[in-house]
Length: 456
Image (cartoon, rainbow, N blue to C red; front, side, top):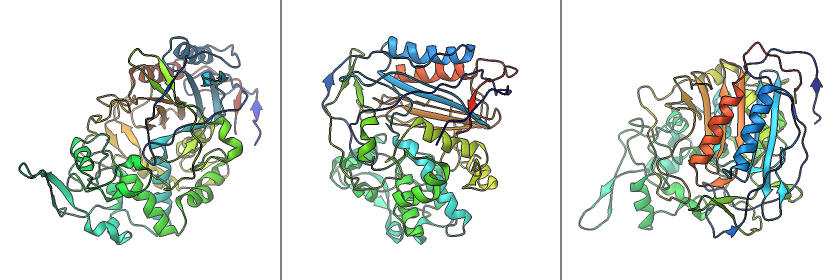
């Protein structure tokens, strides 16, 4: 898997960037929140900067400066960012530390917990099964997963007894509604009613590490509103049931191997665990604490909603596949018509709702993802208005709870990913870094050429 370079001038999508090749190695910790557990006690540490590989071009310097200043100003301990256009990677950079206690530099091949950035991958797996005729989008999910035939809607809690009042939904949730987060399922982390329900012991917390939380009720009738939740974990179960494979095996065979995503896993191999980035928790005074190392444990539940580890390079390959209409290089994993369907608004007149955090150390209140997302496709958020100085109208995006972010801009033929490993999510400083990174990506006029690139 070599890096191919060319000095042939090439028109850029609005970026004039120089390719940088960087080192590798070191570190592990926590486990993904939506699939396993989150938030432990932490150890003190300080953030230091290491900037790798210089560049003489204006835009590359601008992005480098964003990453460097983010670390210098203690906005985050370390960061990796990458940008690509339709032809290949045009920028990669790393700054800060992968492990601040051991003072190990961040490198572009560092492995991150990508949490909810697992969701678009699960959604692509579902759409592969739709393409092959094994799933129908508007079929009730219970057709394939009979356990969902008994799902109930949580209406309220009885004022006198405190018991939850449940009722059958007006219509059963469909595959399309799971993909678009209009199914009625929510997250205990963000929905106060479900948080209270979990607190009664009626259903296990998602932080327990197994799939017991899938027994949670709906919070509203399917199709009546949009709310982020455990829908994609059910989609993971759906992929396993219909394909007859574990989600791990399905992803590897049908997505990771064809796209060359060699560093994306539910279970990080022992020989690669040293490259996993340490998780940091922001403290009240703005500093970061790094928890003591925890041994890796085999995954008990393959969470389609948030179980994967990956690198910026691997995830950019997945993004480029979508940017190129389902194909990367000579490998096609989706039809272009399917990608177009994924990329269209699937929630009609509904809007993305503002989520409220129930656990402040885990996510700041209210939750905000940079990019002005207001609609949702099949597994991806959509912004219907252009971002000033940034992505185009109709771009696709999502994020992970540990502050990993990406977007795909089809009109400008570009995509970008930026990865940190901090809590809480919706951290003001982290969001600021993402927004400055986005402006730097689009800072150079489209006439400027990118003199070096990788097609890898």
